[in-house]
Amino acid sequence: MQTGIDVFKENSETILKKRNIVLVTGSSNVDASGIPVYQTVKNCAGKRLKAIWSLQHGFFVDKQDNMVYSDSFFWEAFDIEIKSLYGEKLLPGPDWLKGIDALLIDVFDVGTRVYTFVNHVLMIMKALSGKDIDIIVLDRPNPLNGMDCEGNVMEADYFSIVGQVPVPMRHSLTVGEFLSFGLNYYNLDLQLEVIMVKNWKRERLFKGIWTYPSPNIPSFNTALVYPGAVLLEGTNISEGRGTTRPFEMVGAPFIDNFKLVNELKQLDLKGVTFIPVFFKPEFSKFAGEICKGVLVHPEDLRHFRSFQTYYEIICLIAHHYPGKFVWKQPPYEFEYKRLPIDMICGSDFIRESIENNRVFAEIKPRIDLEIGKYKETVADYLLY
Image (cartoon, rainbow, N blue to C red; front, side, top):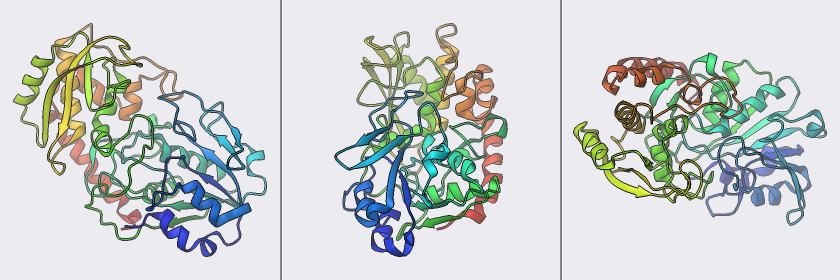
């Protein structure tokens, strides 16, 4: 399999057409040989590469979770300006665009709607509409495959940096497909070129070099649980940040972990095993405290459904520990009024269902209907 950067490397002159470019990427993105994307692009573009723009977590992928600002700086070792778009402003100013003909995009999306990279790029595209700056996307496959979807479809009233278009939590699109859908959804006036992946099939799960697209997605297994585990960010329950198993572990000091595991086993969820664990986060929620909880261990990757799994976990905790379980309050990802859980879910439907102690089977028909309509909508934008 060759991702967009590999295809670019073989055809850079044809693709660039002598245009001056800005590269939007993170330092951990690599080509099939393990060479950093920024190095490959610099080798191909030379002086036509005018700057690198970084998104959430910073160019060096060293910044932790929400609203931790990264800074712009001149990288002397690489002789280039690194400009942060996850700081005081989320969009490029006019001075950033002088002498620029195109943005070259290589972002590592993990297949979950709330992951900010592709949403942020779409926000940038909206800002550049009508400004004669082209967008070249070095496509990457969806690591969770291009077939399966999970979770409700986002409502337009909840659009933010964690959701710019009406897609489900696990959206099944590649980076290029997501941005193509967004371009048409907003009817943007700009040229979008997708450098397609070669030898990828939609049913394929991740195959390639997994570096660390962000500090708390260190492995493919983390990405696999993320479509459901990210719901925990809207609660006071630890999602395992500050441990070596972020998002795979769920817990709090007040939880009876053995009881929780036994109740989860009775639900007979497919493709997953639950293991009682104790962990002490070094930072984030309950830092320095012993949390009792569960390790979510996917076994059958084709049948495991993260959104359903973590929905059931949160339902059980919320039901058994009223007053101790609470929804996290704003701010969250530059949203200062609405509850983080509603921003994450793109609706108040999931939160209200949990508050009413509705098991997943009760909400599944609505979610399935939304996903069915969504698949019909995006069919025209599928590239593979």
